[in-house]
Amino acid sequence: MTQKNNIEFHLEMVSHHAIEWLDKAKQNKYIGEILNEKVLEALKNYNDDSEEETLRLSALIEATMYHLALALELIIKGFIISKKPDFCDVSELYYYKWNTSGGHGIKEMINFNFKSLQKNELAKRLEEYLKWAGKYPNPRNKKRRKTYIKEFNNVVPPFKTDDFDNFLLLFNIIEKELLSTWNKNYYKYNEWRDRTIK
Image (tube, rainbow, N blue to C red; front, side, top):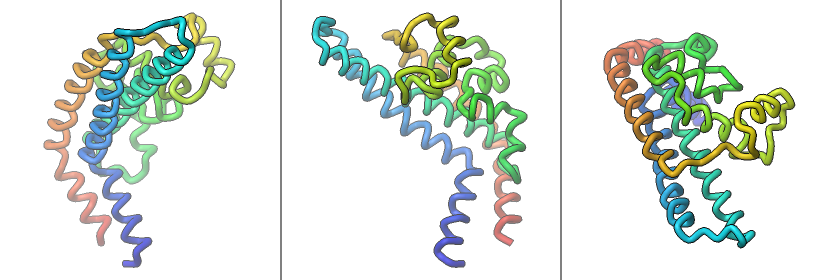
C-alpha cells in the first residue's frame, strides 16, 4: 500500500469506529469544561459598563457553547455509528437523522435516537451555536433568521449558568448508550473491516 492508500484506509477505519467519535466528542467536552470555568469566573466580577469585558464574556460563552454543541453532535453521531458500523455509504445513516440541518441537527438526532431525551431545551439552544451562533454574527439564511427570532427573540442563544451540568447529564446518558450498543455491534465493525481489507 502506498502512503496515500494507508492514510485513506486509516481514515476509513476511523470513520466507522464509534470510539473514535466518542474520543473526539470528549476532547470538545474538555475544552467546553475549561471554557465554562472561565465563563463562571468572569461572571463573578462582570462589569457591563466595560465594552472589553462584555466582548470577552461573549467570546467565552460562545466558545463554550460551540464546543459543547460540537461534543454533543460527535457523541450522537458516534452512537449512530455504534448502531451501524458496517455502513457502506454515509447515506445509510440518514435514517437516524444524521444529515438533518446540514448534519448539525442535534435536536432532531436526539429526538429520533433517544426518546427519553426528547424536547431537551439545551440541545435546541446548542444546535443554534453549531448552525451559526458560534461562527457568525447572525443567521445567514432568512428562513433560519425568522425562525430564530420567533423562537428566541434575541441576538444570541441564551446561556444559563447550569448549562454545563445539564450538558454533562445528557452527554453521560448518550455515552452509556453508545458503549452498550458498540459492545453489541463491534463484531459488525470487525466483519466490515475484514471485508474492506480484502
